[in-house]
Image 1 (cartoon, each protein chain N blue to C red):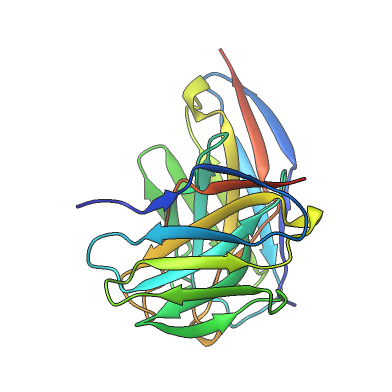
Image 2: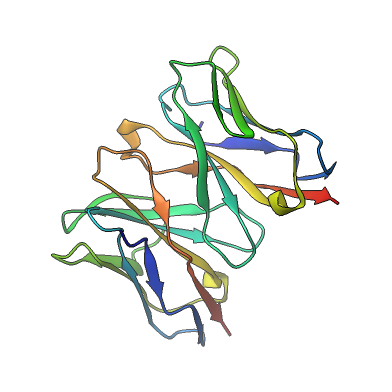
Amino acid sequence: QQQVKQSPQSLIVQKGGISIINCAYENTAFDYFPWYQQFPGKGPALLIAIRPDVSEKKEGRFTISFNKSAKQFSLHIMDSQPGDSATYFCAASSVSGTYKYIFGTGTRLKVLA
Amino acid sequence: ETGVTQSPTHLIKTRGQQVTLRCSSQSGHNTVSWYQQALGQGPQFIFQYYREEENGRGNFPPRFSGLQFPNYSSELNVNALELDDSALYLCASSADSFTDTQYFGPGTRLTVL
């Protein structure tokens, strides 16, 4: 019940295309859903986050779509660029869990020039 | 405003040894969480410290211990190192234990031989 399932494991997209990464969770106590971007040898960097009271949040080229009833959320990267090539992690947390993050297994994105 | 810093960057130890990793939280943050990230996996929560007290622990054995100091910097200690302890150890800070946004440091790469 504490797992966050992330798919796909890897993704190849042409420059200018849309990258879509999906996550699903079981624990309805989760109330915060961030996405992190990680480059090799670096720590995860916060990209965008959403709470269950909204269905969509957009920041620049990054959009989170959230479906509370289906317990799913996804990251959309519009106009994908080679510089977006990285590993992306979704996560979930709740106040009852002391805000510890439960991370997905990661999606390795490669954007072809 | 300085970000989260960690030291050392890399560390090589042999099985059975002990190791101490250090983390300086982002300015103004009093909560530090530690995560272990094995190669190709998402980060796994180890524990969190808030105002010098442990404030939640993940599924890690007691040989993983920590400290938080009055300036809110933190240490992660691992005793009796095992080969499976080889990983990237990440420190994340947040403004307080009731804030869900966490900012990660660059990590310490630990190799156990």
